[in-house]
Image (cartoon, rainbow, N blue to C red; front, side, top):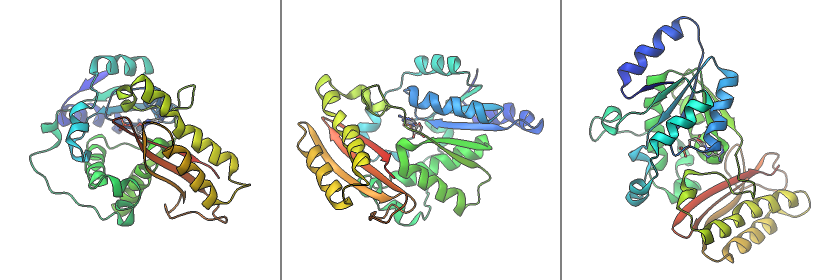
Length: 278
Ligand code: AMP
């Protein structure tokens, strides 16, 4: 695997390959790689000739400085995992390589900015679009692979691709879970043994909602889910919503595409999870 830290190096490497007709699949990450990330690499390998993965802990998408500071950065282990997964190119730049000081950025993504995660993490999606735009510009991928784990993020990136008419196809990949249901996340390393047990209420509740979607009305499902999560020790619910997966507006009995999304603090760690329930 080639490992580049500058825009110039990676562009120089990819340009002739692209000219020769190779298609490029891109998997942007913040590192601390787990099976969820590796499933995106595997999918990209299936669909493209070359796979580029970026590892960049993007400061502009963190609204909590402590979260940024304690974000795990096990680069050596990450490199090994990428080698084993058959990734072709790693792009692992410094912050200074990506940002030239205090840059201005604003993309009008409409209400996606204010709904759900947007409401709890002001500015987060501006930081996400800012960095993904830059990374797309550097890598010029044919396809970009993102996880359903960050469902709203996929919608935001889709919105940016349409708004700016970017020549890239977005592929949403399913959520990888631990055997007990916990959605894999780089932040799971922060969970204590007790947190880890309590965190299971999130995936368990999502599954219960999925099981009940055709027999129980949506308002009742939401109430039951909120009650179950709020009564779990050590868990502080931010939101549990059943929404139309095309708009993020509240779902009703007639909504064809229903996604349940949850965010909660478990101990000191904020986790998100979701499930397509219809
Ligand atoms: P991150 O490093 O957290 O920014 O995630 C990089 C990419 O991996 C994003 O597209 C995430 O949605 C995706 N991802 C994170 N966790 C999972 C998971 N458990 N299953 C599948 N994809 C994931």
